[in-house]
Amino acid sequence: MADDVLSELAVEAKRLVALGFLACTAGNLSARLSEGVVAMSPSGVDKGTLTAEDFIQVDDAGAPIPPDRRKPSDETALHLALYGDGAGAAICHGHPPYAVALSMGAASSIRFHGIEMQKAFAGITTHEHECLLPVIDNSQDMAELSRRALAARRRDMPAVLVRGHGVYAWGRTVREAGRHLEAVEWLCRIVHLCGNGDARR
Image 1 (spheres, rainbow, N blue to C red):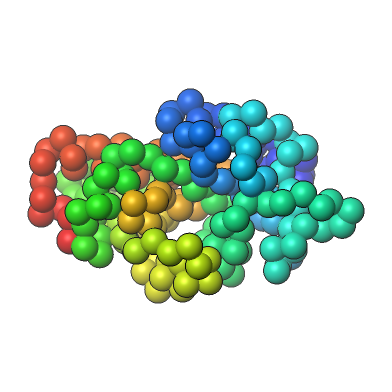
Image 2 (cartoon, rainbow, N blue to C red):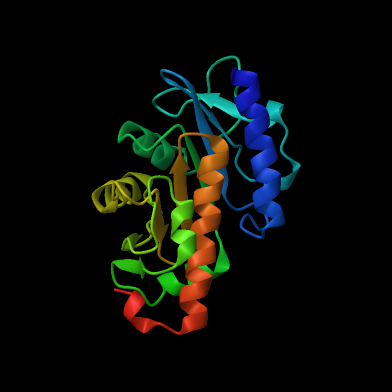
């Protein structure tokens, strides 16, 4: 079971790199393997080269589980905070350009409404639903960034956008988390192409 999840993480990392969401060594992916054990992508590595064996298993405090001594992503603490708040079983974090661009002009959220692709989010069954993507200010302090993300998190939106940084998207599976990240970027691109300033709140 754990081996399957690790393989799924590697496959999804390559897919997201191909989409342009994980440029250079940016971005990170994780998945819950069992109670108190999370598989986390390593720090400073091109995510398109990852294999199942490259993911680091960490405990609830974000420390690698012995005998592993490799360094997990610098943003491990935020992943763990989101899991602790019930954010699914997998998280994909990337820097998709349209979402990042829109974040620079948004106040506290970006509004999606009337767009069929909203149904790519789990639980959304109609384009008539108003989806609000929370936008939070960035911080290099992971404890502070985690507090901001949890405070802004909406139960009907499986993602949060960090201003000038990127998107954290989660789901019940690795593939669903990746789909949610892709959906955010697709919808942000539509908002941008429409020039809809009212969508940025």
